[in-house]
Image 1 (cartoon, rainbow over the protein chains, first blue to last red):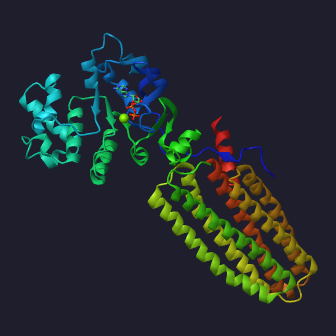
Image 2 (image 1 turned 30 degrees about the horizontal axis):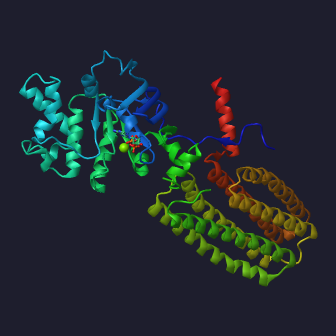
Image 3 (image 1 turned 135 degrees about the vertical axis):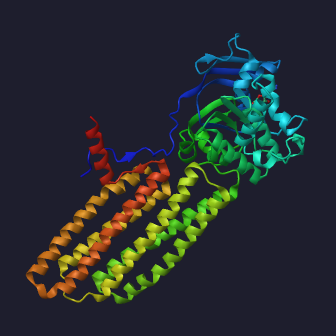
Length: 270
Length: 234
Ligand SMILES: Nc1ncnc2c1ncn2[C@@H]1O[C@H](COP(=O)(O)OP(=O)(O)O)[C@@H](O)[C@H]1O
Ligand SMILES: [Mg+2]
């Protein structure tokens, strides 16, 4: 008859993210003047993996993402409480130079925003500011490597002097990724990086993100749940400024624990 | 459960469930009638069972097409995804049950008068037990009831012991009177088919459990393997 061994096993997870933790966020609260946008969120973000933030518009995804490179510092009415540790060091420590921090933490925005400069100068910009190149040939090498990693080299190598804005939308976004990569970041933040792109350009960016995760800690906000499912290993679901559920992407999309997560990802509210 | 924002999505999933339940109801009736055909020697009834199998096949393809459509057009997630994947498996399993009921009906036509009362009683009891199993499994599906599904899985043991008892009975008949082997073999295949239907009911229940909870139910073999792994670890 029935043995004492339980009949049920948890769902087997294909991809475990037992990578070391890169960013440890503890009890984060964010206020815009009197309006609280983030409520006591604690979250561990693994290195060399893509963590996706999903949730309805206005739930605080971008606000939380901007905490990770202190971009909220630039908003006068914004106040951030709590601790964010990157490799064990507090990023809000007054001793930390926000400019240096932002070279460790690159950011890619929703709308591709190349500078009104040549393709070459777009990528060279950060490397020059941070003095990463020892000379012209060194800079050339950095440019080529970054464009390679961003999957753009073959398409632009013969027209590096052309303006960045002459590229297609998808190419411009890859140029922005190359620009972010050029300063040797450890973390890349992306805020809806594909929402202005067509499906083919989106697929190329997703392919690129999948390659980049071997080297970087990537955190991505996306309004497309399918995109989160396709490219991330961890998914965090936000709702009304709270972190409702975080887990392996596969689990979140096949068997989430929380009813609100379930309702959101199955399209029952939004 | 709350409705989808896109109400056509909810409708399509409901439609899928309705088709499955209809298939299940048909399979249940086929088992009942096939067993009745065996016990009463009703060849006409047996033939209707054989004909109904084609209808079940059609519904299975309808379910599959519906499921593929939902996957392609709606990209279902979480419980919806489990529901759609489950629907494909359930449709296939119910179709198999239909095949087995058809086999029982076919065999019933070949049976001669020599079948004993005891073996007919056995077929009747087993037939009742497996159609009850199928009904419970379908009820569990209709309610997405994981506990009821586990109950169905546990009860499969009862059907297996019915089967073993009948098997021994048939073998003793054959030993007594080897001349009758063909007719005994027919009865034996009939109960074997019923036993297989019981297994499929348990499979339905496993799928229902997965749809309801996202967790897979282990087979006996997997339980044994896990247990041996656990003991070799310490
Ligand atoms: N610069 C700002 N000033 C004031 N309120 C803001 C600012 N940015 C965002 N908010 C508010 O904070 C909340 C969260 O916004 P946001 O982080 O942009 O959400 P999401 O990225 O999930 O759409 C919203 O209520 C929004 O109105
Ligand atoms: Mg946003």
